[in-house]
Length: 435
Image (cartoon, rainbow, N blue to C red; front, side):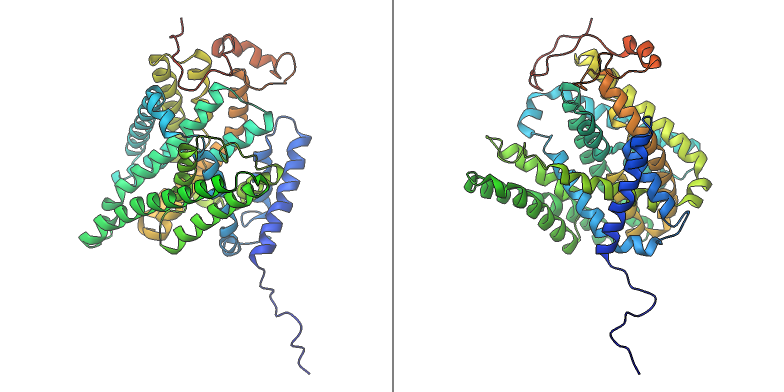
């Protein structure tokens, strides 16, 4: 007798299960992090993902992770949209110092990482690709840690804007390298020229059109604010879906969407929309997935190159922001701490490395191994560094009297901080150079 009503074996688990599993594991990681005051919650999420994933317990494999990719794509799209809201093109044009800091810091990062990889024996094309990816910074870490600590102020605002610019510039530089990558695969001239232009212009147009549509609908429904969150999530999901359908960038289009909404608004209809505690679910899923996706064998093989990569990128970003910020007259708290907030690297870096895997598998192994190993380091050390930088900047409001600093921090505090800046001064205000 056939029992057709019973499930087939082995079970074919679906995306909904893996989304729930990522959240369940994340909850355990968060619990672990809260039991250990020195462990940031993001690190707890990643550690649980690493243990539950293919590298340790093997509860699910890399194929299962690929099935859950759409959940992570949605999470990353929402985070990039949120980051895009920190870039107002009109304000950016007035605050030329911010743009200068970003350009100098990004150029320095690319050059330093490129030569570090070249000296380590990595080929020129791979060195250029990993250097382009090094420009990117993790919006998820900065947004999550700042929210967790209740941090806000000029340094936090500038750091968020710099992270957004980092990701824009990383994508542009990566797109600029696509012709060389296509040439390396002996692709025709039409593909070498057309594919990068299609990716860049298509993603920009998609973000512009849907951003403007979202802005206009928000104006029409501004009296019914209870629907604002649904409009935003719907617009981000449509942007992501259309980007995947048309073969565009699922990273760049949502970022452009957020920039358009912020720039177009005269009243803060959507720019200051609070996503609420539910938004944390996407952070949890993203970082558990990141921890489970790590390839430990490849990371061990490329560990020396990854270590050089981590050091070169960290020094370049901190020196770039500190030196240029000082030159344009930023307050000492800002230029000495904002660079530290750029150190985490995750979403955009993973996305660009995955793009390499999909389109250029010959070069992808080296790129992915170096980048993923570096991501593991930056996502482990990055959250506590960002948290400390926010405290040194004096923007963790409501802390204890000593602002939660340890004895070691109290020794370093005079080296990185001065009297607090005004929290209400506009981002593009003129500042006097630090004495």
